[in-house]
Length: 312
Image (cartoon, rainbow, N blue to C red; front, side, top):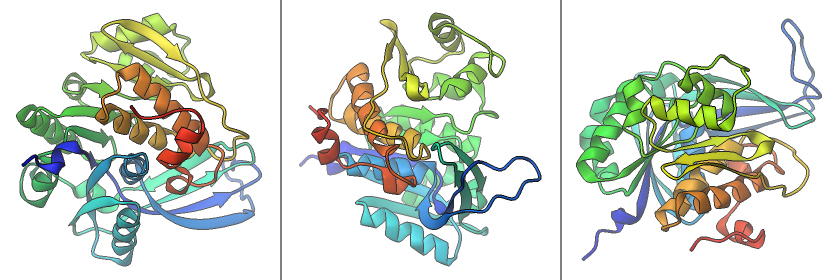
């Protein structure tokens, strides 16, 4: 009998509580800005990407570190509510917490205290409950919100099992070079891609030059998100752009990247090639920015199909 875990995506990352503020503009240094709205939502890049995988048709299991506190219970309940199987490993630190401010144009400012997520270790991935949850997954998705030893452990596990590793290197910085070479695909945004490739922040770089520089670092494939300008895809066939999808007025961009990553992995799991999977993910992300919040903005598979995109 075939093990159903073979059709799963394993996500290793951060889960925690988030407070969202809606402001007329983002605060400047030393400025106090009155907020018109505030709400709480469980999240984190790994949490949100796991939710996106599940809402967009994939079986998903999430592995992350949490504290022995009420926020850990909130995160576990939220993951289960969205159909994600949580494997939360208790640590001697509080569950992660973040504050997100979003202005009238949908741009945001994010602050994160990683807490227990920063105490996740390689042993949690390669042994015990974490290993049991991840060892049968076809795709392993990770972000740079856990220690580098965890990233290396995910790659080591993938080498043992034959899984494909998709790495969203966010936030940028502090990532050992060998991590990139061990990934099947990386999904940085434009500035993160420049950082990886050795260009200065804000430097004007052509698509061809950026892709070539990324591959010189050992990157096998890349899907570089460019916001409203779409996604730059680079693999063994060359580099090309896939345009952004406009689903309506932009309300909040906070969850767009996480929606993109989860949708991309869900599509890859169903057998789409990279460019087709990116197109599906772009549609999902385009829908997400028309809604407030992060996890709450992620569309369902039925909604994405309603915008003319579908999984094969």
